[in-house]
Length: 74
Image (cartoon, rainbow, N blue to C red; front, side):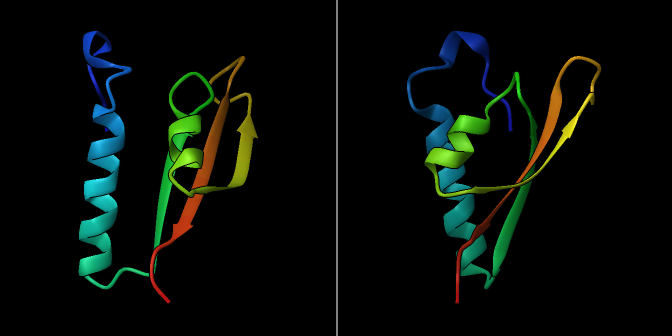
C-alpha cells in the first residue's frame, strides 16, 4: 500500500488499511501479515492493532525491515 506524499496525513492510509482488514475478515482470514521499513509506516500498522513480530536490521543498509501481524478472526 502506498499513499502519495501530497495526500498523507489525511487518514487515507488508515481507511485503505481498514477496508483491507474488513475484506480479509469477510473472507475468513485468521491473520494478516505485513512487511514495512522503519522509514515507511510501522506506526500506522501498530495503531491499527498489528503487533511487531520481527525486525531485521540492516535491510536495507542503515534501516530495518519490520514484520507485523494482526489476528482478525478467532
